Image 1: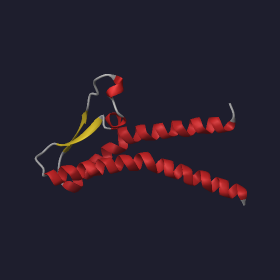
Image 2 (image 1 turned 90 degrees about the vertical axis):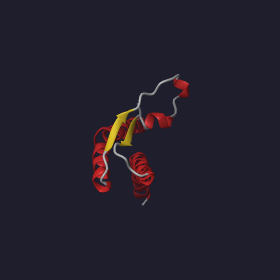
Image 3 (image 1 turned 120 degrees about the vertical axis):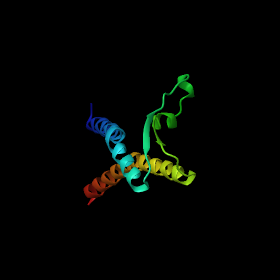
Image 4 (image 1 turned 180 degrees about the vertical axis):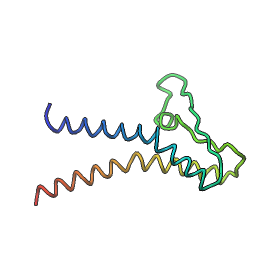
Length: 113
């Protein structure tokens, strides 16, 4: 295999490992932080994805673990918790890609100088 293919496989592998670490460790810490900041109890539930595989979307896969506000809370608090969780996932998914492009173009700019 050539060098570019090995680098691409390593980068994709590292990205998948990052998403797994985020799901298993960091998201739990963020949930506790949101609980502490808003003064609510949030449970993390495993959503069973059922049905034929062609009916399962990417969003179903991303939200297998859902956050549910356990105690009675206003609709605005529930929507805010949902917005925070979506924001955390977007940052976790997009920030490594942005950093990778920045590093890539910095290296190219450095080689052209």
